[in-house]
Length: 400
Image 1 (cartoon, rainbow, N blue to C red):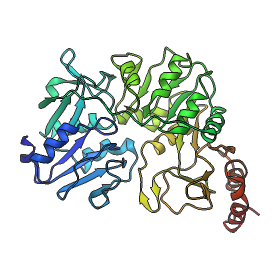
Image 2: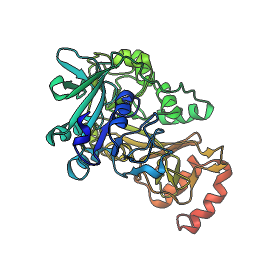
Image 3: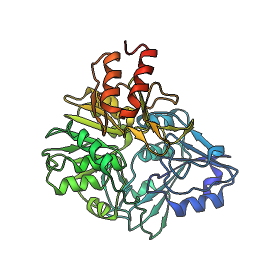
Image 4: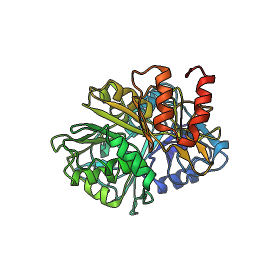
């Protein structure tokens, strides 16, 4: 690979989530002594050694243990393309794509920030390398890439990773049912990854005329489609996919699904244009000021902002929209309340319209700070945590 000639320590952007190009990453690591590897939510292991520095605004499992070599960039996902343009230009992009169809390939299940990275790399004379895989679905929209934009291609034939099958219990089912009370017919949905989003989707299969404008989609969206809950006249829009082989087969060449670059999918102004935008995001903790932490665990970065602040802002400006944070009221493993007096970790998002747990819904938008705290204690916190939270709220001047 002629990457070594680009810079003493080139910045390499690679497909992330479940689309990491394993073969190309192995070739890169064998050819270049020092480089900076920029991957969004790396779900699988990456080359980790002296000389390799990880960069990311969203830490995945593949980077989470590499604290000595990790350069975490706290920023909204919608701003990452500007980062490539202004201060961290890429010298190379490693892609995991479909095979060629009519002179083009598709980025498949991972579009996200890759289009911006490709544009900035080509503008600077860098190298675009693609790993062509017949198992990668050919998705439409911003995912399509002309073959002339690729400098080097390597053919592989390997199955795509699939997330571990998740099940949800009574608590998640109750949370999903509570979130569902905020979803009307004709709403536009954004949900993330995990048991609570899955439970929410399972609770709204009886809705009609729904649309999807989301950072990601999973198998729950396919179930909504098959249940007749989605409006067939509106495209299903996302930036990456996180699901099963069944989902990937369904999106292959499917004109119903439009894959969008991050600058569009995560633009709060564009999100605000979606009617009845209901954004549902998870959190690890919320405090009595309705601030959410979804990024830090025990003082260490666990993930990052991602699209949560983008969709929170966009949903709040949507006509009839809701910016929802959903979480269980109690963390069983640590034996602690997830509703705390004041966050000790950096805030991921704030000023939501509703906080939801299995206990109920705190509709906090437009309420005073005193009323917000009271609603969070009475409707979201676990019963055993409420006396201590009331005492803390009085100390903070939130209750009299």
